[in-house]
Image (tube, rainbow, N blue to C red; front, side):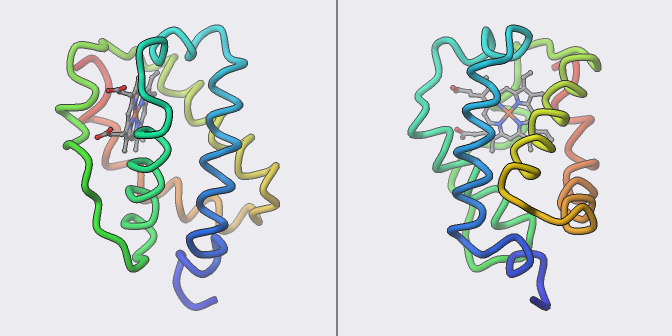
Length: 118
Ligand code: HEM
């Protein structure tokens, strides 16, 4: 495809990545505790929209800002990196090529400072 959105397999590809990511989170003793009180359906919807937007897909993100969402979580650099690893696992299980994975991860790098130790 010509856009990152298309390379990810469009909305259905992104949904599969997010499904896999949620499973990864559920099995991670480091990351799951952050999500103990989260609404999984909302998280699925908002994260899918967010990835779609980052990938220049035809979606509007309707969730809260990254700073608002993660405020008070005090996410360490270590846990942030574990989160990235879980996303990579999720993309591998969705058969996303590594070059495409790296493009998505690059769109997320600027977000890092809005999430760590907030
Ligand atoms: C680049 C990295 C990240 C991005 C782009 C990201 C993005 C998002 C998005 C779009 C949402 C949904 C917002 C909404 O409901 O309005 C969300 C929720 C959440 N994120 Fe992140 N996130 C990142 C990293 C992390 C990390 C590393 C953790 C924990 C270690 C984390 C913990 C959470 C939790 C617990 C929620 C649910 C909040 C709730 O239930 O209200 N996030 N994130």
